[in-house]
Length: 295
Image 1 (spheres, rainbow, N blue to C red):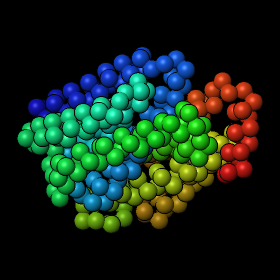
Image 2: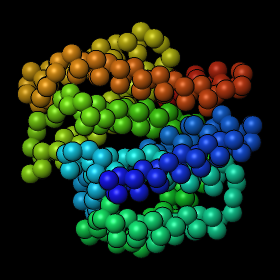
Image 3: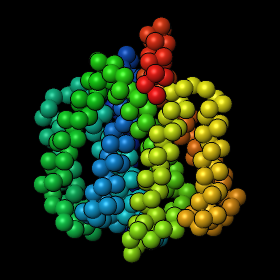
């Protein structure tokens, strides 16, 4: 219970900081707020996939979920969904000086990480605290550069990648939640001794591949193409079920969750696309044409 309260308190304060940052963001930059938020979250998800899932560098133990490995991933997911992206937005949207990056890097590594280790919410395997400090500083540099490319440069490549991250974050998060909370399905391929680690690895890769194709549907802006993409993946999943690659615990729950996840992910992608090109008039139309050529 102590682990749970301490861990959730950190995320609660992160949400308060997120709200504060949004309110203080300049009106002209508000449309970039959510695109940058999902981008920073997506970058963190990629990092955690390689370090937490593949590398087993550390483990979380917030005691939220019953299955230990799912609890570990949940601890990471919520942290990467709120804490790091929020501090990045706070620094960039309020245009704060570099010393704030140093402050948050030290606060999260030397401060909060040490407390979590002491309270056994967080356990280091081969990872060491200085890696966190340096990693966070490096991330804040990337976040600053990405912000410039989106707000000032209007870089088309970064805009497309931002839409990709929006779809990926929604898709991978919802996939994890409907499996871990409602036990809808399970990837039944033993990559590791821990079957839950195998599932998370395959589910993450599947989410990444799906997101690429969903982004194409969003950029093409054709409803028929979006519908075809969703139906195609439902058929693919049916084949994977037949091949026993995916194990189903409840067919109605699985197909409902799968459909909702796909529709929600493309809706988020469309929302972020609109935010990026909001109030751009003919410039937006020209970019849409260029995007279609890029795809």
